[in-house]
Image (tube, rainbow, N blue to C red):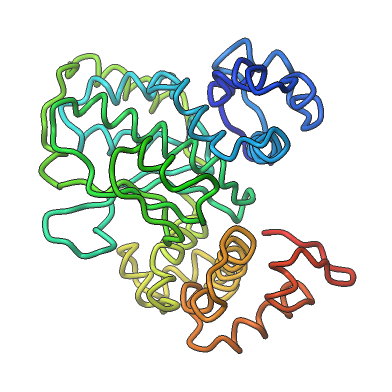
Length: 345
């Protein structure tokens, strides 16, 4: 089934595109998104069409910061029933637990979580925002939209708390770097493994002014009763664990099994029951991560090789030829291999 996203993610799209001199209706029609999707927040649209439309609009209207501009039109309310549970939580840590648990209601290919600081700074954690590129291609504008909304929500709920240490973006700058630092008000680092906001751990214990235990409990009960998470499969959890640690070298099956609190043989049996294997998933994650770095950044090939878990650049070259039938440089330049469909998945 094609992955979807709530149409609330397009809130503000029409006035923004119109202000830029474009026709929002023509973009919607081209990407097969019903025009009525802009009239309600609780509709569902293809997240791939949604993301490709944002990238196309940014390029054609010469608006490289389109994702950030769209984020300025949105707030926590775009998450619908999830927003109620988040706002009524006692603090940031609890709010993020609920957001992580129920983000699939907004879109099953998006995820947020609290992760260790990628820079290993004491007392700092990363609030990560991810898209599963095995299910839908990576989109720079959509990632910037999601990260921008994530940032605004954090600022709103943690009003008065210490600021962010830095913002991590997985691709090269789409707009002047000054635009990013102006938007986020802090240092912004590019070509990073994962989109993230780095904050002091203690900030997550700051009490919310909107905390209400009875409202939070009712919202969580409603979400639990009405929605079933499609992302509880062993393959999905394995993909996320591999993607999380790939930049430090391809993790072994035993390492991922430990992260998932399972015995390696148990994980192998679960993956086999889902008609896949650890080796297949590792190869898929490497393929789609390499595709993202090669097509959205200008990182040296040796660095790309390292970020996808290869020790040598030659290993990356062999793998890209196996996946796409062309060299990494040709893939970066947009060359299509004979009989090969270029793109993740």
